[in-house]
Image (cartoon, rainbow, N blue to C red):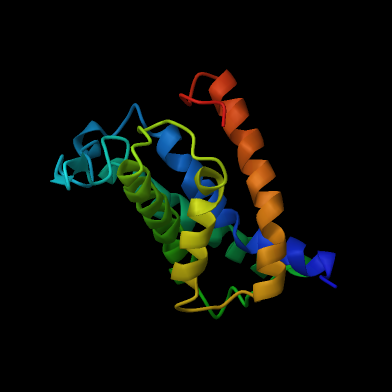
Amino acid sequence: MINFHAVLKVLYFFVPAYLANMSPVLVRHSLSALAMPIDGGRFLWGKRILGDHKTWRGLLAGIVAGTLAFELQRRADAAGVGQALRLIDHAAHPFLPGLLMGLGAGVGDAVKSFFKRRLNIPPGATWLFFDQVDFFLGAYLFVSIVYSPPLLPTLASLPIIFLATLAMTTVAYWAGQKESWI
C-alpha cells in the first residue's frame, strides 16, 4: 500500500516542475527576442520537428521558474517551514535539482510535441494524458541525475498530477491564456 504522506512529499518536491510547466504561458507576451522556435522552423519527414509553440523563451522561462521555486523551497526548509514535506536535503542540493526539473519539464514537453507532430496532432490541440504528464516525466528523468525520488509514490502521484493539470489548463483557458480547455 502506498503511503499518502510519501505521495505528498513527492508532489511538494516537484513544485518547481509544475511552475516550470506553467511559466511559458506567463511570459508569452514578453522577451520577444527569445520567441524563436527551438526547432528553427525545420522539418523532419515533411513535418515540423516541434512547431512554433516550443520556443527558447518558454524553455528558458521554465528553467528560471524551476530554479527559483527550488530556491524558495530551500530557503523555507532552512527557516523550518515545510520540513514535514521535505523529500531531499535542500542544504546539500542548492539549485541544481530545480534547474534540472525546469529543464526536464521543458524537454519533456518538447519530446511530446515531437510525437504529436508525427501523429498529425496540431500545436495547441489536445493529446489527453500526454499533455498533462509530459513535463512531470521529463522533470523526473532529469532530476534523477542528482536525486531519484521514490518510484512507487511518484507513480501514485500521476493521477493527481493529471487531474491538477487538467484543472489548471481549464482555468487558463477560461482566462484566455490557453487555446484548449484540456
